[in-house]
Image (cartoon, rainbow, N blue to C red; front, side, top):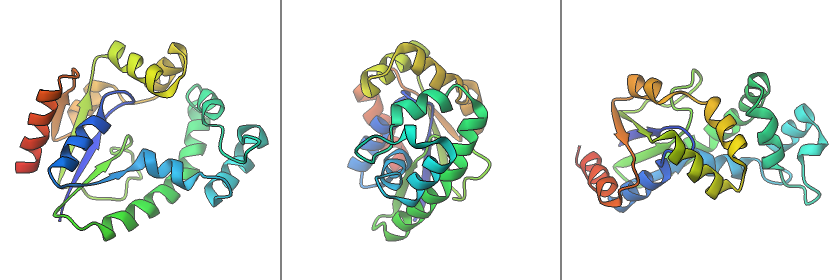
Length: 191
């Protein structure tokens, strides 16, 4: 089994690239999707978040108030660190289970913090997806229904494109051209 790590900042287009890799037969392990699963109502991770940040970040339905929590963690590095410390252990455990259960010769890890110091999985190939900052902001605002200021705060708390380029084995400049994305995914699968 080959493990490919796909990373990049919010709004860069990792999900679009991963969707094309899936069409090539890869199993996608999506850390953002897993993050939502492990913080569902009644989960141990949500209980830890509530204890660390307060009841005001849990909606009356019992679900995590992602928008409100996002406002504070993406404007305060120390609070983001606390949140990551709580969630990463739960996310990584679930990722490990999905990797073990994968029935494919290629597993793609879609991970925003692939180059984080605590990332526990060894990748055979790392790919950074980068995109123009204004395009990223537009995508984040449309996707998440947040303000431009919130999207900018999120980007500010992430690695720069230059850092991704320096750390990744391959860097893909995503300008939204679907045929170009498909060709890139096919090339990666063939490697």
